Length: 223
Image (cartoon, rainbow, N blue to C red):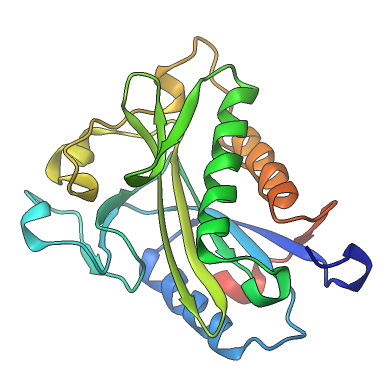
């Protein structure tokens, strides 16, 4: 890890509920324009309902999209669903500067999710054969999909907190045929999505080797 005093600060932006295609374009622009002086960022948000098809996603995994749009994405992974009540966190970091490999980044994101769930006494773990985080029952609660370009990452994770899970039945998520679950269905008094976002932000900050983060404005991204 690079010494903290030589690093740019980590910036976390809370962007509310956004259209996927708009944020996708903003992420690509951010990654293309960044250089060695650009601060690492994490964007925390929810999306309006949308299915996204990653580079490994097969058409047959989209079973019955109905009125929910399908957007092809350049991230890794298969087909997934985004919607209100699900945290999407886009991890925009310079892997070379952090001295991280892609597998390191995946592992620390998964660990941040496990630690966040542990905060609310939910036991979960990653799987060696399929990125993401799964509860002890085998249900999937969080998905990962990244893209690395010019040594920097974009895209990130989806974390089910308190959402309508029925759209998941319209796809075969990740081609695995696994059931999806969420925080709200696993504990009696679930936290707000904002509480989970802040806990996850702290755990991602620590996992990336930062002592703290600063909150960035959302005006340039959501306008």
